[in-house]
Image 1 (cartoon, rainbow, N blue to C red):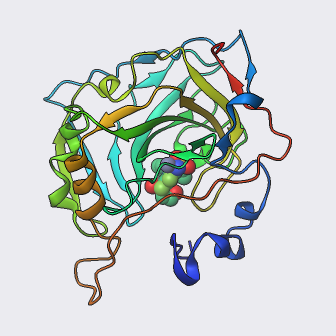
Image 2 (cartoon, rainbow, N blue to C red):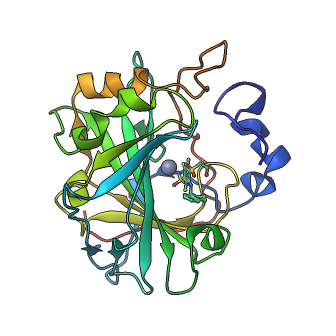
Length: 263
Ligand SMILES: NS(=O)(=O)c1c(F)c(F)c(S(=O)(=O)CCO)c(N[C@H]2CCCc3ccccc32)c1F
Ligand SMILES: [Zn+2]
């Protein structure tokens, strides 16, 4: 599709020119206002199957010009939703080295340092993610908020290879690891709402789950994430650093944001 960016003439205020859904309803991310949440007792703990990958499994870590993306094997899936949602990839959104504030979802106006998204598609109904991406029940994305603090040894399982994907379209192989370790301890405490892809084509096709409890990465790890990669190709004359790759909060409209926990 047409090229898009987070700043400049192809920045988010221009996305709807080539991607009409970006100007539509049910857009993500949003500012989660905790005093407006609706507790929903039917929201069960998230159950993840086959997330503990062996080191003999090789994953592809890539730079797609918009984010750092880790491919995930299809045997990983979410089993606690009404239909099976099979893993496709995980990617991150972050700030810049002098502004460690780049999560997409914000809580009461507070932006966290970064955010991990694990993208899944409804494999009960669609053969692959491309067929699912524009369907209202097509995708389920799990969001994990990241704040600066203790070093994160699980994030480092892929972050330590980031120097191999400095430029757009570069890829490296990464040994498998326990992807469950990227999540906070409590998979029963989360926010839930109907939203969209946060990048073009912005399809309103995502069942969003954002975990209440953030995880940490160290300031050094954050600086590596925020300074190591470029959204431009290696042969381009002007290297474009990749940082602040987050979309601003969208209008909630009349959407209800549910939560799986009281207080
Ligand atoms: N924040 S977000 O909404 O979760 C989110 C991103 F931010 C993001 F950059 C990507 S992307 O890297 O593919 C860049 C352009 O879509 C995706 N892609 C998903 C949905 C679109 C179709 C597709 C096809 C194969 C694999 C992944 C995906 C995305 F879902
Ligand atoms: Zn994302």
